[in-house]
Length: 323
Length: 261
Image (cartoon, rainbow over all chains, first blue to last red; front, side):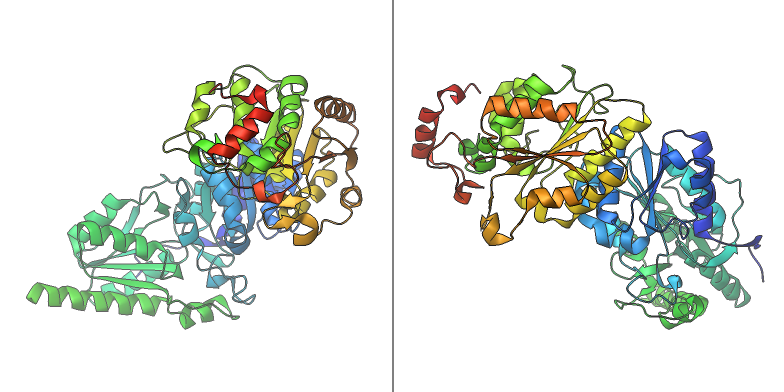
């Protein structure tokens, strides 16, 4: 059963690169920086068209973050691009002091997040970045779900005043959102409506959630799928509306169970409306080398894992209704 | 200020007083009203944020905020945080600093923004010598020459002291001029950074060297705690506040600093 149609396949990082090129045209203040990963971040078109607004920083991410902070003082809108690991963990203090605490309008754009980075292994597969970034006061955290949405998010953050962490990935992935769509930072989207439970997902796992909902439908279970593309500021109203409506929540993300989307959702539910919750996330482990598909399976982030979590949360919901 | 809250960093502040006075009153081109973007003005970045007492003192005396606000230093709800911050919009401060090693990168970014904006004004920065132990400084040093950032004058407070002792003992900086030269910087050495006239003249000389394809570093020899005999030249006064008796003794030696806040 196909509830949502795939229009093609592309990597989310290309959505970033293509939109960055568009921004070069439309916004003269946009400046792009990288730390020796321009090709991986798909910045080539921007660099060819606007060489004077491209700053190659070499393999020196800490300096890149400081340079970006300095550029904002002259009114520039710097977009830094490197792998998610080097965009966050490696430069946490630089982001904390020179960008977040200083309130600088830097857009930290991070590719190759999560286990779908694949063969490079755990040194590069950051699974803690959402947690680190969402903890910083003033930081906005966005995890778009496909190529089109990554492009829309890239354009949206240029207009958003303040530091932003934009997280995307490496592999070709289904494209299932429209190219021309409304993208509002901080507002969740319901992709599939349902009555039995709600799957709240972000990034690559939104597509896995859709696949899970399709299989569940065949079993007579109506799962709602919500794309929580903004982790911070979190759309608490959407979470509470879902909890109210279906009374059972599954979260799904390519991140550690500690510090991610699931934890943010749990915090909202715990404070306002406790309902059964299951989390699909990496269970406090480092990744390893492998293909993206193998790794999603290995670390319990695949479609069957979401289906299992959905069935588990429905069981708990039933038990709760009896007692 | 430091005495009143029994915390802060008097040593480096006293050692850099002549530098701040020269820079803000004799060297920098700046407007009376503070604008964050600093378009058309020279900009200054303090990288070793712990010497905030002298920074705040000079900013207040430049008229960016009232001198009496200095008495709120390090107190609850003050704009004068222990280390400089932009959080509450203190005029004169453009970036938070305190965690060391970040200011040279910020200065480079601000210089590039000026270049992109067609603004030929200068960027000044100040760093501790102990701070040069941070790797990010050398990332920025490499970056500045790669991009020929030649409207930047970085100054190093070369007092040879840091919290745990002398820089020679803690982590030797070895041949500092040679290090900067190797990174492609124009190196100037100021032998007496506590002589106001020498500081002014050297900064003026540094200004004439700008626009020649190289960033400029002024290695400024100072004495930590300058002007107060029992503080001078000792790392012990890096981050310790004087007690009542010591304050009276110090102020007696520096009558011009008697509290006007």
